[in-house]
Image 1 (spheres, rainbow, N blue to C red):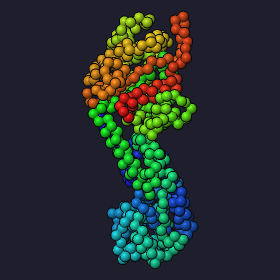
Image 2: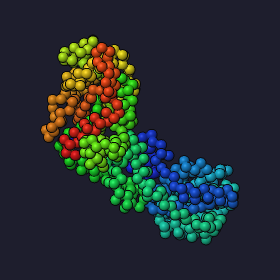
Image 3: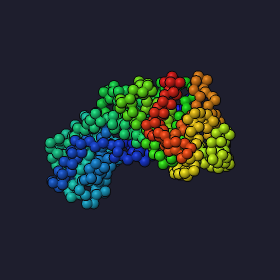
Image 4: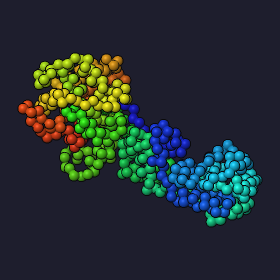
Length: 502
């Protein structure tokens, strides 16, 4: 049983910022603009500029509503803002001297944010001294700034606002709100989209659906969440719950990775087809595309009906079964069969044999081999185009596959096994002879069992663009199109899903 990765949705801005750096994610794609709060800041900055006096205001909102995230990313959405955080290690009496130290000549849109003071312990005398210092600062050229204090405790906010008004009234705070802006964060109808883009940014493009958290599933969690942070927390808990259910269902079963190997005679067409059906550099199946196929409703094919009954599970299953699509190029396929194939299939080739060294070298350049051996990188970045002769040789092989591909898969398995061994990787590669486990009735085309515990089921499908060979093989319909491979993938994965009782 493999370990299932739980959904990670950072609930604090500091954690989100660190995660974005770790995964090289763009925060502007994750964080949403809060229009009313942004408009309020813009209004206060205009007041500072127009009156040539500073302004102080508290941003009051519940914990987890996004106050810190809003203020920390404000300048990403409002080019006129220049935000400087002031840590809570500064006592109230030290804030004005620190600002005076940092500011010689203030720039337009200068904002100071008092961080990590959501629930302050207030000493009335210190508070009064703080606002008295602010009153004097705001009347100087150096004090033409905006100070914002994100705060959660409403009683503290009201006490601070009252003190500010008593000390300096509209010399310190805007008379319309008297120092307290009520922050509500983004509207609830945006929660799902924000959670989804956050998940995609931090999980190799995999959104909430991939964790089994479609809109229908999480509707109760959305309804009961009052803040985005609460919603994130509920989604993380729901993800853990679904993983536990998945693990309990497959207790003591081998949970494989299912990798589809698409053979083809035209390297360019092969690359285009697999690229259309995958996302990212790891060749994982494009889950969103598969969901769109189910949701299109324009097919009554039987396997699609079975999948539609699992509509809320498909992304979760495709992700946990690590479904990927790789190219099986003509170079790799032909060299493997020349070196390791049965004479019964070699007779179809013009050049019937090749050295094991050449076949293993070709196998070593294949993308699926790179990922099997955990050495994916630049060696797999570019697929070498096949020569016309090699493409024709593949077509001769593919013609045999239309009748029976067992001997082809056997040759591929033998070549792969030797290539792994030469790379110092201990693994068994078993072609079409053994079930996945004692409870399974499936016999994968190539069952790869790694000593590190990974189990990978390779499912080659021998396809063609339909190009013939003059006087030998007539032209035919292409079987390498996106639609053909998509159908094969969904039907094949469904066999595994049913076999495992999912």
